[in-house]
Amino acid sequence: MSPRGKDVIGLLFRLVLAGVLGYAGLVKVFEPGGARIAVMAYRLFPVEWTVFLGWALPAFEILLALLLLVGLFTRWAALASGLLMAAFVLGIASAWIRGYNIDCGCFGGGGDVTGEGRNLRYAVDIVRDLVFVGMAAWLVVRPRSLWALDRESVPRQSDEDVYPGVSERQV
Amino acid sequence: MAQKNESAKSTREKAAEARAAAQSAERRRERTIRIVGGLAVLVVVLGILAIGVMQSNKKDAPPSADSALPTGVTTAYGYGFPVNTAEGKPTVEVFEDFQCPACANLEQAYGPLIQQEAADGNIQLVYRQMVFLDSNLNTDHSLRAANAFGCAITGGVGAQYHSVVFANQPAQEGDGWTDDQLKQFGGQAGLTGDAQTEFEKCVDAGTYKGWAQLSNDAAFDAGVSGTPTIFVNGKELPTSALQSEKALKEALTNPQQ
Image (tube, rainbow over all chains, first blue to last red; front, side, top):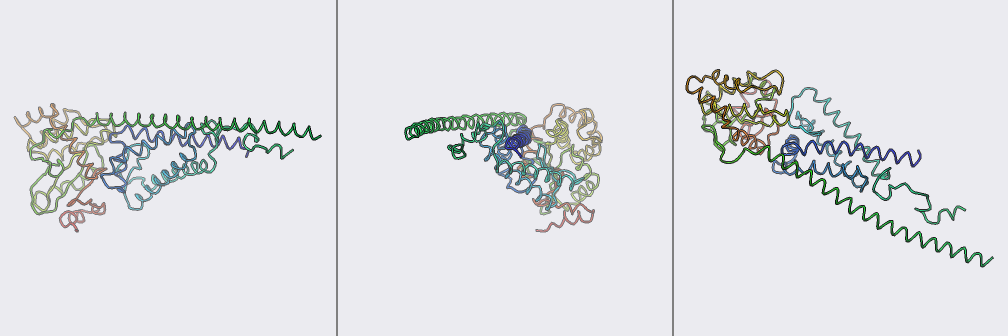
């Protein structure tokens, strides 16, 4: 694939991840107590931590979303996004294995729910998050993309700009 | 030939110098973008967070330590309503939201059994009301029902009222009850005459809305994120205990340590 094509894919992945994280973060931040109930439902953290996590989680999601949106620190933002999504996968899997019927709280809501359609719900959540992990991994490996503030993402005018002397050697 | 080479070299050197200058300018520009952009992003995030926290605090406004509490309710059991008194027996705390369909199912299947165990003095039963579904469903039904429940507790028919509300839960989650319905339930719970009049006044006044919030927050602080949840001596009852009346009775009255 041409570098240009890869830049377009990079842009696409950036925007998808920014959209998902931004939406998830905004919904949570405008719920009472942030994502506290959702965090609590996983029963992974002491109750005292859940107040902090309830606010920190959506704030972090929005931060990553904005960075990816404008293409700033793309590699690091993508790395953090991928790790966050991977953590969500582990969290959902652990709730599944331990037999809790919870709403993943991915996009607001959260807490305990009825067991109806439980396996399908968990599976869909996990597969979806894994797809996002894949997109983030692409950006970690190749952070360059179209329309980004990062310098390395600015389309190069010519190879000579980046590798001084290259054109001379080729002559 | 040599001369030509020399001039070519100096041209190349000049070009290299110009490139170096352009590159360092570019690097400075890049750093500025990163710093300014990073700070701008941070400011936006903190702004959004501040708005969210403020809105959340506004919605939670009523609870204050001096909110009126229904008769018999104290900070013991996290503002829960002790249905009976059975010292030395297992403490069974039932966390519910009146709007939660699963709570109505629990109530229908095992409510009478649980209340009977309390009446027989085998357990110390506490109802701990939650109202968090209001924010999920964007309603105020949970809060109004919990307030009316508080009024019924003060009127001496808390346990009965509790059953009546669940028995009359709307088929569609979120449809809730009207104030008139909540008042009628008082009559069905056994209130008559002056007691019913008092009760209706209390429902209209929203006397125990603050208590409902306190109770909800206390449940969160106890780590309860969903309803129904049952704690026996402070430990969450596993769902396996809800498979049969026998299993539940055993789990409630003979909790494993």
